[in-house]
Length: 301
Ligand SMILES: [Fe+2]
Ligand SMILES: [Fe+2]
Image (cartoon, rainbow, N blue to C red; front, side, top):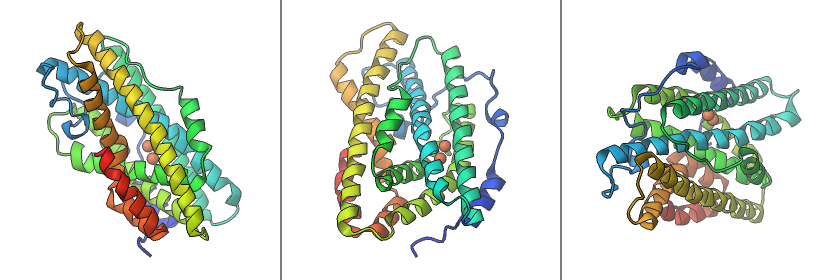
């Protein structure tokens, strides 16, 4: 076996890591808009030379708004996916049932948390930041695919959030402490989700022929392309919000759009595609699947 994850141990660490919503973000808590929210390695806003430092920070905050809005939308797809996966075997392994139901409960709490964050953002930010959607339509589009393909996308995303926190957020002292703590708390619970996703994908891949796996990887790419289109549209909305907030049009909108779209590609897709744990699951599923995804990864770097 390429990992030692199991439902009993994962549930135990999950119950130890759990937090209450009010301990992370109270309904009336305010964000500190004098600080950056997103780490530079994900937002890539300090690299935009046509913006002054104040404008770069405004774009950084818009990028953080996108981050939590996007995860809110994705988690609205994860919640029914996990429940659907748990549902056919509710009288089976008790550890499995409890671990999956707990997973779904935590994801519902995260959706709630991200909505709270969104409300705090709206209260403190001078203009409206449009977000792609509606969330229901995005969820339906993702979930209409082969569960193995959906499971792989979710696995990739949940490992990716682990890497975002450890690799970019934890040691960045320029970030708003509240936003940082929110990401820390999310990371603590997501660590168990990624393990459970691994078990889910293992189960969904069992007994599949190479041809069936290949087909699921085709669908994985379809979902990836759909998300990528959404990221491009979102990059446009982000620039609209930036222009409104700073009261001027940006120079060379096309170049900025491409730059910010590429930053989002790395944040939401590429950084997951190259995650070692995700690659290990792919290798175990099928070396050909691992190879196909590795070949596509540089586009999202
Ligand atoms: Fe989450
Ligand atoms: Fe999660």
